[in-house]
Length: 137
Image 1 (cartoon, rainbow, N blue to C red):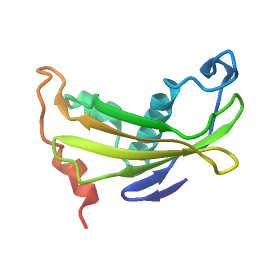
Image 2 (cartoon, helix red, strand yellow):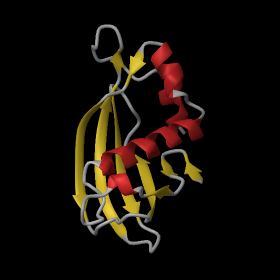
Image 3 (cartoon, one colour):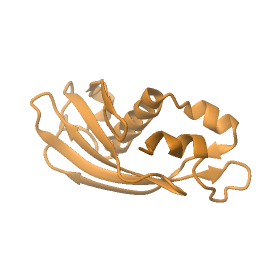
């Protein structure tokens, strides 16, 4: 795993049979799952526990997602997700993604925005200070 404060490269994700359609091509909905895997690995690499954030009353739902498919991913392909934090988080956190296959071909490009919410009220809150401090130079 390569980690640079705002960039991260996921562990290889092996495409499982159940993630493909009848043609053996990864169903489009699975790319959002691959983005999520990369986000959680990125948080872990930062030393941040999503479970711990939830216990503190903070949730981070996806509020926007955009994807662009470049080539098909197939059953048994090994995918790597490159994730980039787009800006220091405030009330939202924005990421861009690039998924490549074992031949280093770009399979999918995308971006997501997640909001920081109070888990009880479901109202937006500012990014926790200890989290946003990880990205200041």
